[in-house]
Length: 513
Image (cartoon, rainbow, N blue to C red; front, side, top):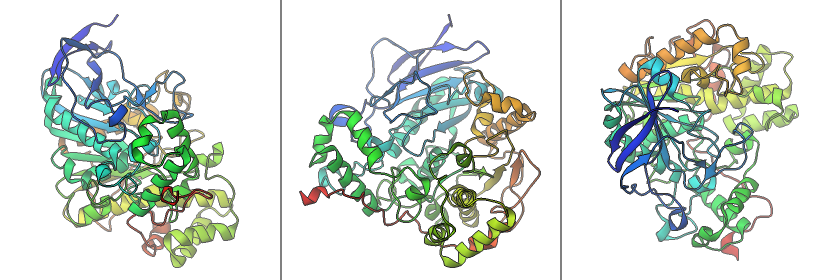
């Protein structure tokens, strides 16, 4: 049985557990009141203190969500989920703090092992690692300001508000766990990276972190208020209620079932113009600007960035028949791309993709475009805007040809965390087949933790127009977007939000009742 270790947060005493290979973990610490009952769709409230010593040896529940094929079969999901976890080499000292924000398309995800286990990064980087849970799906990103009146004016971007609450807890408490509250780096992947981008643009998050790492950031996937309001109206209709107050009495399983019915499964139908899904809303208060707009305005310039993407972000979908892998006709593919980036850019991009892969199917060309449009190009645009406004950005590209999956979406995260070859990682057999995994993992972990410590991951910061993108898993440095498509993307239009979300066919507005 593991030994316990004690420390005190502002709310009270905590008993964590020591880890066999060094360090300790404090798990399941509440950073806000449970968002249940009347607080279900309300902004997070500060946590209440407790009496005596709280057991912090077991992880709390993951957020309520629909089944995910990557979720462990024994995973626990619940509305009462606003907890965080701290891995620390020693509760004494003053080490850099790395705060992880998980991805999952803002519909799923977890801050607990095996997906998120901070012990190897803690030891390998000599840092304090924090993970926290935030609300996802409708419970985290339902915008009730358009259907609920003034009383619901604060119920928007609740998942982002949860993240700010967790960072405030870190600011106030992490010194008691051996961390330096003045040296906090937030880092996240996919939706977690988009969250980091949003935090950079949120006034309420100012001063809560010093550095930021964005891994495959879909920072352009920010929804317009009109889109979010229609989505909220459709959710109320689908569950059969007239007013937001009535949602409190609806079983969470019914809300989860409804949220899946009113958004498309296909990634293009979610994130390209005309699409809609759950995610950040440009509401003007909690999130007044998109991440790129904030960078262009110089709002992010005082926060050094480590930012990048993966070479083949979406291509694994073709191998596994995931949403987005249905073969489109050539004409339909052209129309979809033109609707997203304009006619000139569409012709140029399709020609460039076909020239690079003459035998590619239309499915592969579509997935290549979606991966670039959603992840690689937004990362490049964010870095460029941040640098031109006076900030520092270190850029990278993950390009390791791992068996079966290659450098597809999310494949770098286990290497950064150092759990790529652990027995509870379902992808461990693939990493073990690639002879460079161990060395690449050490290299990436060192770069990420060194950046968290000093702001310098080990290569030169970005200078516009130069080949300074550090490559992991292949030769470099390179430019991003790559030379083959850079001119094409220069022709593209880039709306600041995902505009014009369409209503679900057959859904009626709650106001029509």
